[in-house]
Image (cartoon, rainbow, N blue to C red; front, side):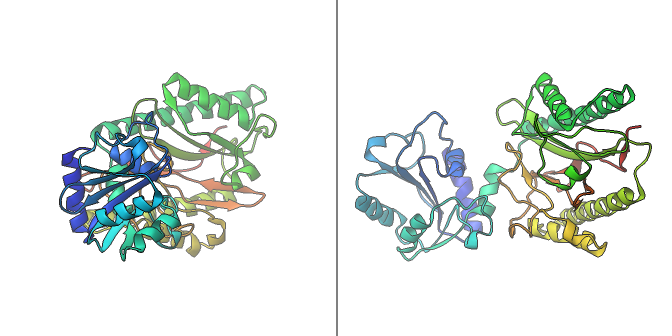
Length: 395
């Protein structure tokens, strides 16, 4: 955090009509605060600290006396405290005449992804006759709007996924034709080896699921709990990775195939419904950005979900439409969600996210198609990592 960044934040605070941003952490409880302030991972902070950015003027730092120099690299004036009584006194003094501020909090926990400030701390701040609003829309400018280098790394990861999908399908096809046993777990191990060979890493995963297992959205095969892939099976693969570099950005794609010359009519029908919902959601986003109108994550979920409901499969679409993508596969920015949470954050130019509707028929199969969308600074909408026009036929 430098003075230029402080001034940029202050400009956004004025746009949002608030008096300031109170960043708070207790022993690593608020990763957003530590990331935004640029606190090195190796710096151990075991006591509560606050960093107050008013809409005008110098920031104010509140730190414990035994960690008095911990925020010295940040601009602003330092205030020290020893006891909890002194901390509350200093905090009240620093906040001064502020009436409306933002913190990492979500009313009614509507967005638990960023609601990391504990209720007791909120009670203290509100006790100063201050209204606390969510920092969610301001925060994502600093967590999830990608720069050119980050966008390039996302595109590199997307290319790795495309290549790995092709090789994974070839592995399954060759094994079946040769009469060689291959399982879901074997495919997962193969994908991980491909990532390693291409200098990529991943948070858990990937997943390969067959038939009824593909109807379980979070199914993951294990060495002892896996299913053999055989002729006629429907196979769903979900994989995600990023380049193993500082600030590498993830790509995350899902594809479906059948170990047969063609899918069944039932599989084709469900695929068309899912693909139709996917395209409706993408077209909605594209049109909004073309008109330079705001797009809320919850709105995109509503559009996608309504499409599947009209086709009669609404009860089988059991998760949000998509999630933000940044240095984490499930990023800190706006998700396409009005089911699990009410995500009313704006999607911003420079953000990347998944669109991944799915229909899961218990005991039968699941179809999920996952694309990644990258919003350009010019409001363009780009599909990255390719597309799937129909169910892939492996035999």
